[in-house]
Length: 123
Ligand SMILES: [Zn+2]
Ligand SMILES: [Zn+2]
Image 1 (cartoon, rainbow, N blue to C red):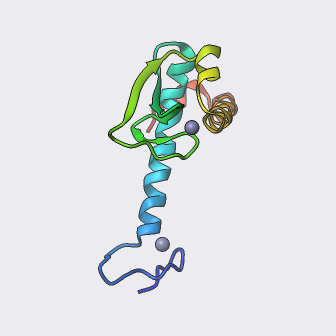
Image 2 (cartoon, rainbow, N blue to C red; image 1 turned 30 degrees about the vertical axis):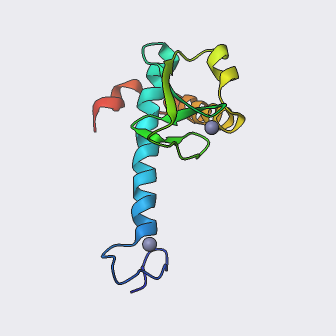
């Protein structure tokens, strides 16, 4: 079977396209971030960090196995930390995470500016 959406050849052992399923998961994860990031910026929520070897990654909210830089975080062997969002934390995390996080924050500010505050509880 060929996936009608992405043209991937789906193995007979799969009922759904694994690539599209992953894409939906990624989209759901991305959708969840702004809500957390708003609280992180406001100081009412901590950044979720994972230290893997010498590298500290910022993990995605609701997605502790995934870093903002797209690195996969192992379930075992990663030291989990919750730090406030500040320059010390940003200095500690890996460059990829820092860039992705900065981008997410900029998207957040842009999105928040264009959406009236009263519309946030309509869905
Ligand atoms: Zn597909
Ligand atoms: Zn990282």
